[in-house]
Picture 1 (cartoon, rainbow, N blue to C red):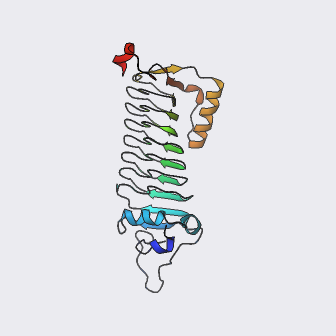
Picture 2 (cartoon, rainbow, N blue to C red; picture 1 turned 60 degrees about the vertical axis):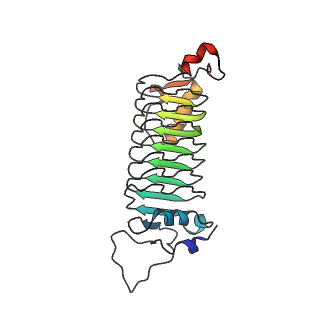
Picture 3 (tube, rainbow, N blue to C red; picture 1 turned 90 degrees about the vertical axis):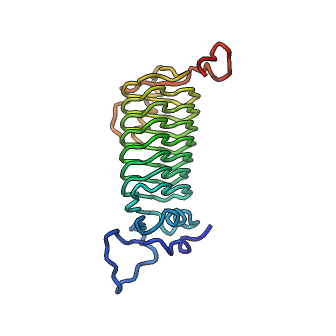
Length: 262
């Protein structure tokens, strides 16, 4: 992998989006430790940004980033594999922070389809709403959606923790294999359809449960788990108001009597 200094050629560094160029003061090659690297996507393409974020020494040379004027562009900050912090000031398009590993990404706006898709670790926070398939197939890490998430939130989740401050749409946690989904609002139709071992917590109403998803008892260990997840997400909610849902484990193996449920 290239070093950060080799890939920053086309990336504006340390310059506010509305700043006027000052010939007497050349642009610094890299920011100081206290300042983020600023990238303006109105003048720099997403590929250049991602290439810089993938540099082998990015965590050592530039651990903090600020992305301005994203304007709904797709695939921003994807495939990160370093302990960096990325603040995105505005709305993003499809697959923002997909395949994230160890990085901390904050979207100060709404996110399009597949935010944090296939995330492995780290944290992704959306301060607005998220479109469908948030954290699809994600194996680990924490996704926080402070607003609401659309259909299929957590589809095929494989170990990720998801905390949604508002509602989730239909078919959320469809085929969820592992991990926890916390919904502080309401859930749409077919919650947890064909669920495996993901654990679901909903504070509001559930329009309907999917095939093989059932309500389960909330025990002391589940209240402790909820308390920790809400604290990690920075969301103020009472754990005692949530109901727990999980797999009835009747569809693990095909049986002709259950044919209509598949």
